[in-house]
Image (cartoon, rainbow, N blue to C red; front, side, top):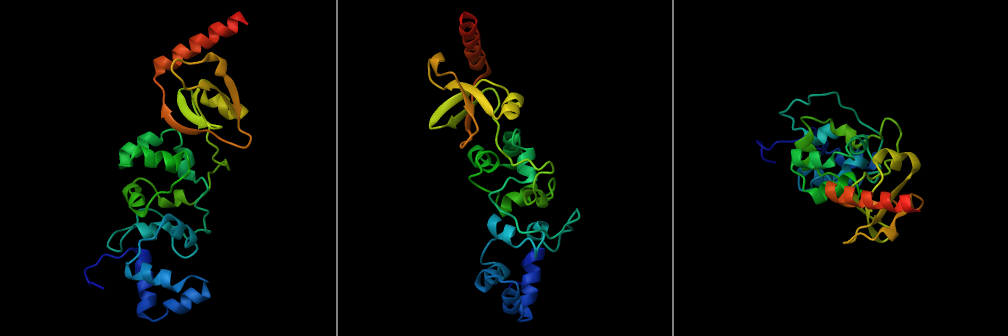
Length: 231
């Protein structure tokens, strides 16, 4: 190892075990794959979100984020192993302003949508480092304080895929959350009012893909109101 190489706190602990010839025994004791831990120790492998999640009982998230020549600016703790597919406290708190998070920390919109909304991706170690000055990374590995499961509820104007169709959401976030469904029409041009439907969260949930223009949404709502008056 290059003497000037920067080590994270976690790597420093692993390197200490390696140099003392104790890494293999430590891995066996804790039922961890030696080859994987060796690669993490020598820096030939970068820990993924899944790896960090599995190693939480041994290393606090901040110990992967900060280097030993840096001071960790908050209290940090080891945690129970985390299911990387779950909604964490940070993801839940920012499901509505995820676009702002993307802009602030340099995420692409597609990547941020998949992390915060669709849950098809997780943050990388580099992304955790970008946010670390503002966010204790433990927030990505702990459940929401209110116990919410993280089910996504769209807002008026969201364009979502649901049941194989692309829908324009007409009902507001509060009502969607309260009743576990949203009201919308198929996102066509022109809008076909006969596709107006209530879409319940039973076995499937909507996946946001875009945001409609506010004037276009209001135009559709006006049409819906006129139809309902005539019924």
